[in-house]
Image (tube, rainbow, N blue to C red):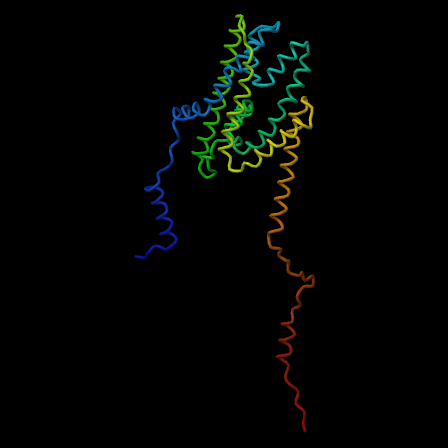
Length: 299
């Protein structure tokens, strides 16, 4: 009886080890994912509910049906853009002006989507909702998540996408809940001064969490320095757009600098000279010379 080849033996041992020692990874239960998403979104909840309530209270001051404010939180979910819409509508602006202003204000979300494009790509139809619900706070949470879904592990990758969907859904739920409370409270008379500070406090908490979650902190410091410089150099109405443009320009410059530096460190390999002339076949001539008899001369 012939013995198995080394290759087949190695393949069989790997198969036995994978089957017995490491069973197939099971998906994480939905209950555990909901609990994990709830823990992740608790800081956002404490900011979104009062902030959504502030939006609801302000919306009740417009000569519009309160249900339109709830509809905005359900189908628009623009955050600061909704506050801008309330201010513009209160000043008598038209729908076109509100749409253009909101688009310019939320244009920063384009950069958010680019950085999460790879993680959203395999989410199927769920990526449409992930793109829709990508607010500042949701982006901060999703960017801070560890990459548990390896490319060669479809189960872990699917769990990662399920967790992102739950985080996005819960964040919108907190905003909608706050809007409902604000629309109800807007029918009452009370002093609501200072409630808008919830947005500032929320960004401070999320910034601290990102500081501890990021491995490379120099982009964080760069954005902070650019913003501080913009406070001195830019008008107040151009601070946000100017700071984002300056930070992106500096980051792109640093990327090209590092790329060129890595290219210089790689050893330069000189290609071998190319011979455009085809090699000559001299074997026939050699055979002819070998077959020719030597000439003998008679002394």
